[in-house]
Length: 153
Image 1 (cartoon, rainbow, N blue to C red):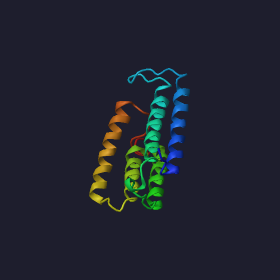
Image 2: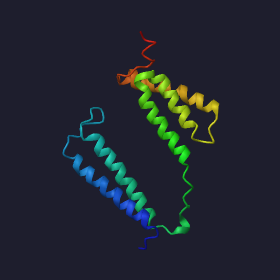
Image 3: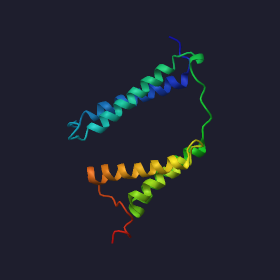
Image 4: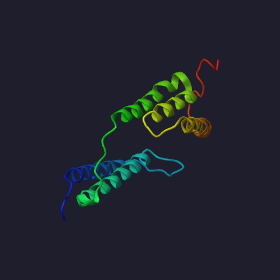
């Protein structure tokens, strides 16, 4: 077999090795079940996903250049805005509550794309806030403020 893309080949090998290493390392912990996850459940699941993605990248290295799409130019502005939205959410959550933080996350991440429009962004922010509060606030009872602490006193 001929390797057409050495970068994909080495990246695939790296991902497979990392996934296998952490998968084997996680076996020292008890798995538990899907309902009652043990300390080894998430690392094993994550290492399996990394291993699978590594295999996909590895297989892509053997495809001829004609079968591959050339990579697009990296949108650094969009990349930075998405990272800033996640970081801002983490920083705002204890101060502004989940409702405001989730809306901030959606609006800043939507600004990263030229294709987003305001109506869809507002609907997405509302749906994310409702689902997030329902699942995390009431479903699994995570301890985070839903509204800013100034409003709850």
